[in-house]
Structures are given as C-alpha cells and as structure tokens.
Length: 316
Image (tube, rainbow, N blue to C red):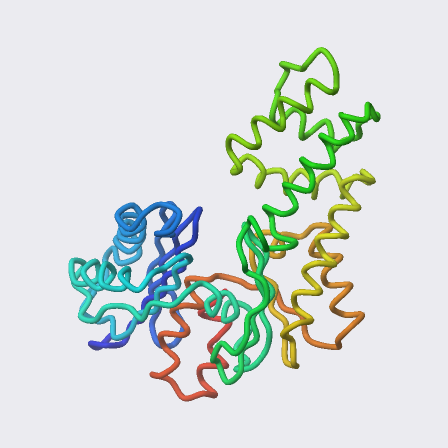
C-alpha cells in the first residue's frame, strides 16, 4: 500500500468503543475495541483513554502514517473534545486528527449508503433524524432520559419497573416480567409483603437510575414468552418510536439503530410493522458503526458510485 491509502473510523458510545482501519477498497485491515468512550458519561480523560486503547489495537502491525482521513463518531462529544482527539491521533503517529461528529450520522451510515433518508435510533436514548444529501436536516426527540427519549431502553426499563411496583402495590399476581424485575432488585431477599417489595424497589431505583436500563432486556424476554404486561410495554415503546419517526421522515430508507432495534425482539418487530403500515420505505438495520465511520472518512477519496458499491465491505 502507498502513503495515504488507509482510513480510520471510530464509534464511541457510553458502553463500548470500536475503531476500524480500512483500505480504500473497503478491506478491513485492523479493528480494536475498548470500554465506553462517551466523554459526557465518563469524562474526557477516561473517554480518551478508551478510544486510545481501541485505536492502539486497531493499528497493530500497521503504519499509521498511511492514514489519510479519520472520522470519530462520539456520543456526548463536546467542542473541546476535538482537541483531545487531535493530540491522541498525533501521539499514535497519525498525520491528521479525526473529523469529530456525534453518533447520529454514524448510525445512519451504518445502515444505508443513500444520501437522503431517516435514522431511528433506540438504545439507552432514542432519537430520529432526517438526512438530506448526507447532511443532518432535522431531529426528533433525543431529549434525554428525564424529559424525552420515548421508547428508548431507559424508557422501557422505567415503564417495566413502574408497572411492576404498581402491580405489587395492588397485590396483583405477578407474571414473568414481575418475577424478573423483583429478582433483579431483590434477589432472594424478598419482603414480607408485596407492598414492602414495591417500596424497596422504588428506593433502589431512585438511588441509582442506571438499574432501570437492564430491565429493557427483561421486557423483550417476557414479551417473547407472552407476558401481557411486557407485551403492552413493548407495543407502547414501538408506538412512541414510530411517532418519533413520523415527525421527520420525508422519504428514502429508514435505518434502525441502537441496541433496542438492532437486536431481534418484540420492540423491533412492532416498530417494523408500524413503519411498513405507514410507509413503503425500505427498512434497514444498522451494521458496524466503526466501519461506517471509516466509510464516511473515505467518501471524499472515492467516486460516488464506488463509495456506494463498497459500503457493504466497510460496514459488514
């Protein structure tokens, strides 16, 4: 390979960081993973360390001076974090620092090479975004766990905890979802009455809101097994997500991203059903975000037709 014939893509989220190194023909040359690289969640120092660790692994055995462009998709990035990454790139021997963007364009590119379309992302948070000519045109929701993110993993987990504690308060018989939520918080240390169990779950959830997110997976499991409470929560989450898309979608493909929608399950199934009922759009599921960031880095170096043709090689 000749100088300048490699690109780097970074997909840094709250829970994990992925870095991909690709040749301009789409071939993957290196890949590295590390912990969360979201500076809002972990602080700039810890986020930089995670991205640096993944970058080191991705560049192993490669000449960093051959990297001509990089794109870093970082959830929760700030204006000052770009300077942090510039130094990190220089410390690793890369000649030019990365173009820093948030994770929304990366997630869309992970599912489609079309220049115009819509992203629906539901992970810890939830947002929809419309892209026109590869530029972010409009956003819907993404307003955070306290006042927005309807249909997100956090929203689903909170809905599950709320439904279970209210059922316990009323003394109603529990189903699978109730059993899973109670076990999540209390283990085998059950209370003398359902009301006491509800009070303890409330205290634990209020003390640490991060305990609510894992309940989303329990909703999916219980709904798949026919639990009525879980099925109702999954349907409500899907309705919220479809409504979020409806506020911005104006043609083109719809890309589903985020752990709630990239994993097969009742929420994704319900969302796809609702989207297909309303629009005849192609619905795609996002693939590798780091590869998508590398593809975005390569866009200006490739003819448009070649970039579109090579998209699966980058994101696969």
